[in-house]
Amino acid sequence: MIRTYALLAWAWTRAAAQYRVSFALMAAGAFVIGGLDIAVIWVIFANTDSLAGFGPAEVMFLYGTSELAFAISDMLFGNVDRISQHIKAGTLDVMLVRPVATWAQVAADRFGPHRIGRVVMAAAVLGVALARLDIPLGRAWMVPVMVVSGIVIFTSMFTLGGALQFLLTDAPEVANAFTYGGAMLNQYPLSVYDPRIVQGLTYVLPLAFVNWRPGLYVLDRPDPLGLPSWTGLLAPAAALALAAVAALAWRAGIRRYRSTGS
Image 1 (cartoon, rainbow, N blue to C red):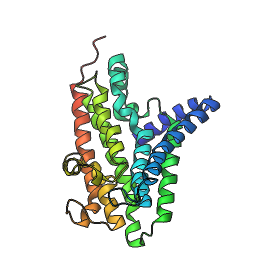
Image 2: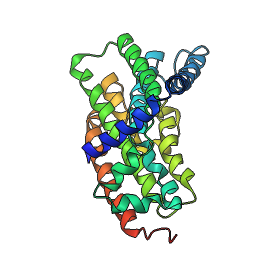
Image 3: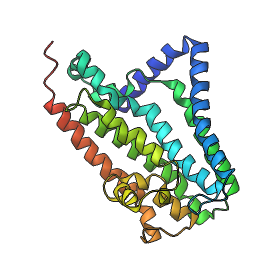
Image 4: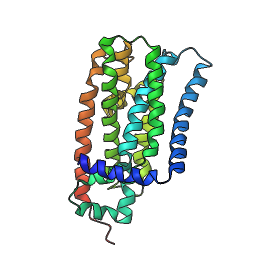
């Protein structure tokens, strides 16, 4: 499946490279859009010294880890939650008869390499934040684990959103509310939200394990909900659990699919 995905993604990348000016402009646009989020954070800290008890560097760290994970996941696998377009057009039928995993085909379809601009912006923000923070090596190892776990969590969310569209083909926005909406929630310390929201993002949809709970461990900050700091180390387990649920949901959606009838 990995080889098939890589071949399809490379084919779309070569196609995009044929229009170099357009590709460069779209990549620059993605970079600028990511910069707008940073501008909002700068505006906030131009009027206050802390946000829910977190300083500028700490907020940039939480933003950078979440945004980098989401940007990579969106670039590589974000097309999965656009499967309703294939269902309506009947092109999913073609994918199903090929001896290749349907998920890989959907994920790689119309692969957009221009999204690398957003990845670069997020990586730059995370790099600046890490340079300003004094994180001991005993905790710094968790940072790449956070990013990888976040990629798995967001990819699982995209997959769940795609599976949902086998039932709600006319409402992909419902899925986007959890994928893109969840990414926006994670841009700031979750302590700015109602505790019930934080509990939901911890025990129902484990988006808190993208950057919040492991971030508290890395920053050596107490958990507002009173959970022990070692719960931040459960990010990989939460990611794998959500991935298993997403895989089951995807398989159930594929089995339920009965073609467009056209």
